Length: 484
Image: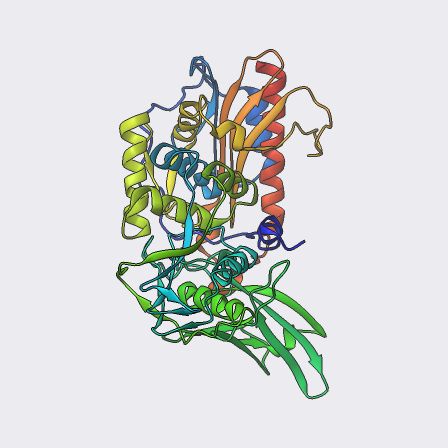
């Protein structure tokens, strides 16, 4: 299907590329001493050694109720959290916004409606909803059409001031990766546009659209041209209100499709809404972007699901744009680093957690937090909604296969960048003796040595990630067997 959840699944982020900074600080908690009550056990050390990951593996497992650390290794080393940062963003946004917060996308008019004519401007107003898709935008168009408006005397305006415009989440990513889109007060389809191609007699027929389940409007503000070359796969050029791509013809084959990021989401959303309104008989002029919202009456609106449900999808599908929009909405800051800085300050002041995050999604490789501080944050969140929003991971056997029907539950958030893998959450046995854990693995030297052309699919990356994930499963199985 092409519902909101289909769009989420279809647009899943792949491996991402971190930045180049090494760990800037360490947790204030002293490192475990060999032979102490929280020293590494031989079983865990042997598992880490056998994994042969290189770089640094840091972990901690503690009793959730008391906070007593049971086992730890390199737990104070500050490492990239990758997408586990989204759990911290959820914790923060729930506190600042509340579980029932909903984003609204509205259509306003600056004058009265008389005999099917709006006497004034029509304004599409965004609040930063990261979950808005084409079908919901189509429903908004239908709601406006139900007002009987067939003509406007003024302008068609778009206001995207709900959150600041961000060109891209992390500048150290290839241009074409869909998990690194722009962010704005008007977002659509996670700010991705569908590029489809099919080989014909004289070359390739290409199209761009904003497809949903019920609507497939064509898009003109983004275009792509096949070019006779082997590499690079894509090139990108930004115009004032459009995205221009070229693609290596040698990579296209007979046909296919993929999602490309949108760098002008306000223009994209406004264009698609105008196309949808045309189907209802209202032809709108080209949208003009405005920075301040004039007075007017709300004519129609669409609201997101409650924040808790938006977060559930974000944590399941690890959508970067959702995390960034939630963080920016919660902080009210004017940029990602400033917004992440406010979240860092909140974590420290309210929960004693030390972090140096540069965004809300974990995509930026400069972010750092220790395994101990991550576990401490999860422990602090144990009485709220976060544990119930996390995905169940399961107990795995020695080969990494999930053991179906195992009585011990594991709910956690995963994270992956190139040569960085993380996992944090809760081990929940039938006995009720819950454990909180965090596991970080990172080979930052290997990651930082990658050229830009290697960053979407680095040589050796999938194998390293599989080994790191197998280690996570082995550690959790060991802890579940020994400490619950």
